[in-house]
Image 1 (spheres, rainbow, N blue to C red):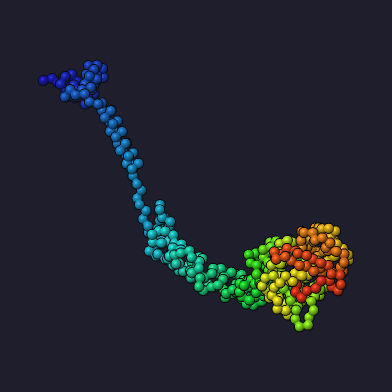
Image 2: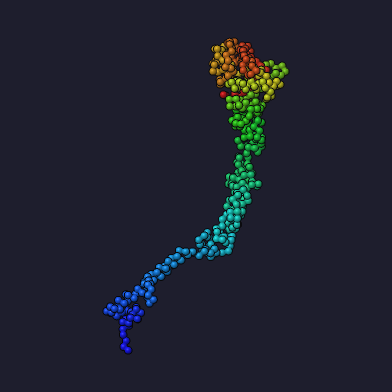
Length: 409
């Protein structure tokens, strides 16, 4: 049998043409090839090979992409000597006492693990009052930290055995107020907080009630010991301090000279006695001061000096250090105070006040320079009367009040 060309066999056309191709110029084969490319031997329509290949490539690409996106890096391995993500260090050894811990975290002061190469101690806290302080060093005097229960102070390099109000090289308090020794700028040091005993808790000697009020603003009215500045702090006196009137700070000293054959005292002699205690004969300065003076005079409070024993009475205000500027001066119809009576003055020319009420005919012109008038008082502390005395030292009394004279309204 003679062989026919494979491409001309209908039964084998598709397989032959597809398998081997068509000869040049064989149009029938080419036509059949195009027709057969859209069907299979079963007659079912399938996707072109090119489409199948594309789908497979796309599927492969998608799978590859998904694998890349979902992939995770291998976990870091602490101890391999390589610092990887999540590690502060990795020295590749098992020594837990060097700078890199076995869990690949950096050792530090306060982690509770002693690093002998650079730490003296490590108690795992930041308390600088215990035995391990600062940069993991053992507490010592001079480190600048006060160790609780062992040191009273620690100024570090400034510790000085001689510095006032400082800290010694043994970490105990140095010379200071309250150590019962007078040192540095101190006037006194009685090692107590009693502000009324003459030595204030600030180690300053009280000079007057005003001085106490300035240094101890909440000091109450009462009895205080002072060391008047006029006597250079050599003599003290027990006085009554009014810490309220006109802001507080008025000083009162009671003097009673009624002893033995002593006579009563005029203003000049009374002034001299007051100066023995660093003070002056009282001149009342304001309505509040005058009222306070009357209450002090008529109440049993501070004991008098001068030898007498009478503790209270209105006669403590019988004479005052208020005098005529010139002999014969009057108030010209005004009341006895520095604003209404320019002819009279306090001993120091500072303001004075006795009353706002005009006393008819008083003070009259029958008096001497430097002579005090004689004063009488009502039970409520207001002035009842005053009278000039022209002979001797003027009016006189066994009892009178002295004042520092540093407090004004």
